[in-house]
Amino acid sequence: MDRIAIVVPAFNEEASIESTISGIRKMMESSGIRGEIIVVDDGSTDGTSRLCEGSGAMVITHGSNLGYGAALKTGIRGTDCPLVAITDADGTYPVDRLPDLLAAMDGCDMAVGARTGDSVRIPLLRRPAKWLLRKLATRITGRRIPDLNSGLRVFRRELAMDYMHLLPNGFSFTTTITIASMCDGRDVAYVPIDYYRREGKSKINPGHFPRFGMLILRLAVLFRPLRVFLPVAVFLFAVGALKLAADLAIAVSAIGLSLDLFKHPIISTTAVIFLISSLQVLLVGMVAEALATRR
Image (cartoon, rainbow, N blue to C red):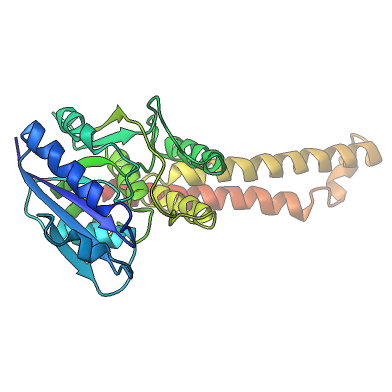
């Protein structure tokens, strides 16, 4: 089995960092996994970094808080292991399932722990937003996505390096690598896992939802442009066609079916604008699709 680097981003996680590292180490010893544990302290102001000392993990420290994705990218760049696993430092993910994810990597580029197990503690307020984002991503990629942004996954390091210029510094790292991989036709496997109640306070808030949505749309324009532009073009054409039909109906009722119809401006400017706009959006989408295919 290839060596694996297990990257753990941490920001003010003194309540759980020791137990997380201990759990990872026990899992590696019991399953015979060879590799290293890399903790990236993302500018913590508590005792996170101090608690990592003597744990046997490699600790990389950011001078200031750069973000979840930035910490993951630092860890990925800091290893030469061909496989990389990521997990959170807050105790929410079952690290003992990493061997199952590694087993699922046979012939795949990435194996993701899907939070669809028997014990899943996702706050109720987040579930509608997560469902909507997952449906949007499924529409863009054309593939079923059980969990869009799970933080427990294993992937080939070269895959992450291919997308390093796209991967953001924030929480949307996992969303980006999932959509980019699927749009490029890479094999992604999903393994059902549990998800526990976190230790400490969550770093995600409702303000992240519109950012995730805009990110998905930007990735769609980059990888599958017509899946965005075509629905918009169809909508604009439908509105324009309905307005045109309404204009004709009003004109016929007022003037009657005669040659006098051609003597009056019966088609509104609104109908013309919507119809021309639909054509423009479609043409832009076709050009974008050609560029994406060439890429």
